[in-house]
Length: 155
Image (cartoon, rainbow, N blue to C red; front, side):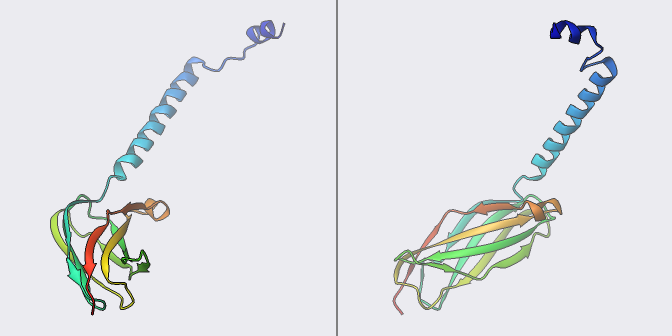
């Protein structure tokens, strides 16, 4: 009975003008999602990385990298964490850097090793957070790099 009533009424979801509106809406949504996904590509590609192999407490380790800058409108927040041979985490100074131009570049970043670290094998894990255009202030891109291993020598 209810089905017969619905079929007799003018209840129809897709009339000819509405079908066109639905298609335009779907194409617009797909274009927006594609645009956001495309602009979230990694602003920097790391080609190679190396680190100072040995350091004493109070000294500096230097991370050297060859990178490919894919975008030039980003700010990068570099947050390094040092883990000593006992697994103790040392949060190090956070640096903010801007990406100025596209292309390949060689960068070197020094990090001060705290005096309280245990001797032996240690690792540096660097987290980089990319802020590229105003939308990414709300939704930044975060990349945690693999650990860079080195040795802390006795003073």
